[in-house]
Image (cartoon, rainbow, N blue to C red; front, side, top):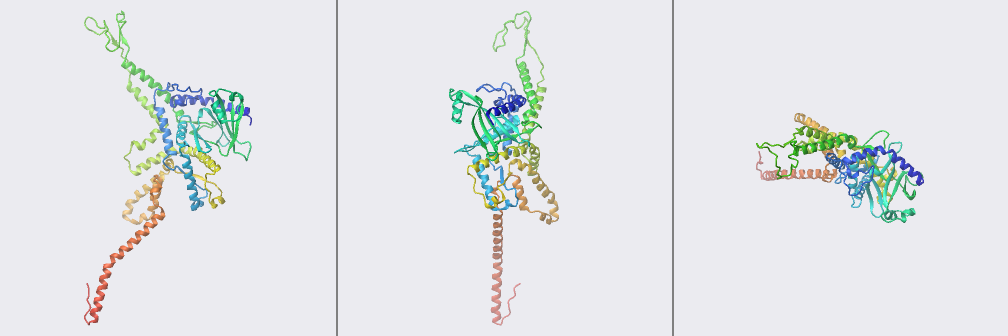
Length: 532
């Protein structure tokens, strides 16, 4: 596809998004001012908070991103695993070991010092909460490993396929002449002869391949200056993992919590401005002076001397204008708006366990169950739309680089398919319902077990303990394996048998002694000794 044709499509996608850009600009100015570049470029070092009079929304966005990370991709835990779609095949030990090894490699590469995964995912979650779209670009840095870069929605444009999946991306960016020469070989003459710090615009286009069999996606870098293609290539998997918060039919871009409560955010800022003016008037009210002009030089500077401010009788001739502002009404309405904004970003939902720490295990599990039910529709979407393609892209890059181990023969014969098994806190919260059912059942059966202990034989306490531990996120490394438990049981049985032998030894010794004495007396013709 020639450069001019690609640039025409880029311009069309850019024009189609003009209304969305206006919406995002309003959000960015009040929620994330560092990204308020949808309508114009930001000047480095310029003040960007002139539209903000209240920090509730920016703080809520930061907490939203932190909550998304802790529930979906926590840095301290293995938030997903891999398995084969054939459940029977997953019981094979060689397949289990291979899948576990793949997961270890993924996490080692992902959280290596040069990958920058955690910080870029945090920015992606910030973009998701502010603009409804977020994602990361994953590429292989030769000699370094995988490298992650968050997507700047202000200069990145998408298109969907017929299934509603993002499969086309155009990204606009700027390079200095020096940077362009470092990156590209075939540049227009105007760029190669320009001063090193002169800036030029480039477009990176990724779209379904027009050459089936070579690449799944074509990649093309275009210099807008001169409309010249400066680099071509391709990808085996789509290089960007894009998540959307909520989508509206006919719109390829998502809608965010900030967009949902933008009227409340704007109203809150205006209310804060009003309260500031009212407070200013209350602290430094207008002064009422005499009309004769005798106090024209009246000063309100501390320590100032104002002659003529009292009459002959000492009565004050200057009076402040009382506004009688109702601060209590304004503060109450402000708090209501703040609560609405925090609810939209789910801040209050994540504070449930923090605000009520004195709970029983069952109450905590009920809270987790409620949280999982409320979070599943929005956060669960990120698992399928962003994290799934991200893992697919990682595995493809590592396989092409030869960094994956040799799979077992049984897996090769069955097909090298895999499924992602999420084990994040969100997944555990969704499974909390099972834990609640177990706890409630045992609590309900406790009185019945006092009447008939056989009631508890219905359940396997060991399996129930394992299930509860898994639901609550107990680290597997502190749990004993089935083989270790079997060895412990065998040892306990052996110790119990030895104890019985030792306990029976004195009795056996007395019996043997008595028997010998009886035989001795019998040989002498004396009556046998009878012990009672």
